[in-house]
Length: 359
Image 1: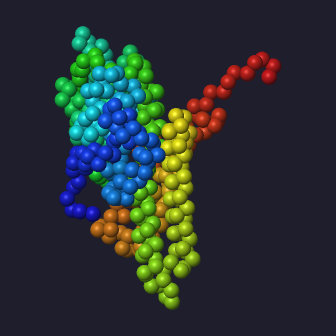
Image 2: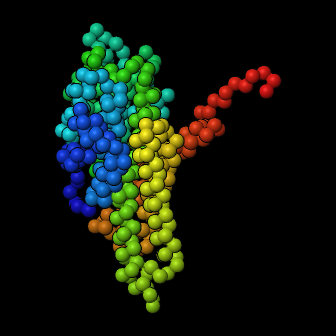
Image 3: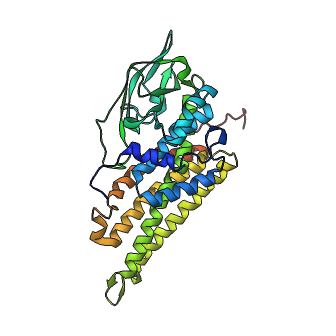
């Protein structure tokens, strides 16, 4: 780790120059025209290179929060205006869902939008928004006619401001902040999709984010496992090296099982996406498995490395906070389990079909 703080804007622009935002995007918008499987492999490699969960979080917020909503729901004019810069990394994007009083529950959203002669006026507050302090373009969700809807805002819009009042000790390469909308006036062509389509768009964005956000972290976990294996082979402990002790060997085996399981789930999400199938259930399952695996394997790695695992220059101790955050961002583990249960026909949110009388 370096003493100087990372520059989130520079890091994201570097991702753009590396072509990281061009995968699974049609060539007409500056993409590679390749598959989600290619996106997955590129993100895993990026994680191995950067070893930075904050950057992984930031680039995924840019990709799934701004680029893909515009690809799926944007008008031809909106796509032409915003996508080339976002895909190239010349513009930084994200999305704003979480609110101080509602968390990430879109049904409790308080931010509002009203019509005015030239378009819309927005009021409200969003909190813990990834990329907010550096974003040029932000997809913001607010209620229009009581219906959650999406709008494309820019950092230059009057009434749009950002503050950094709630810094966190996790994923520090990701710039986070509050978005304040104070009679923020935007033209009518900034409505993204249809009025009331916000819930569907939020679900779609988070679904894709959950499916692939841990691809980069899988790359970090590959590096982590390799380091632990190398250390256990070189470290003498009694008459044999450290890895010969069953207690250590079992922790390493568990780390490998978690990593391979994560790879299988990530590949399944990519397979479904490339086949044009829904990934709602698979992405929720992947998020649970990945977030728990990252945190537990980091605990195991530090235990094996001992005090060396806590040295600042090692960098791995900071992954504990990142791992704790991983259980929260894109929807907590409990939210994912609620979603999985509902999709299986039980749990909160499940509405059974009405049975005919006498059945």
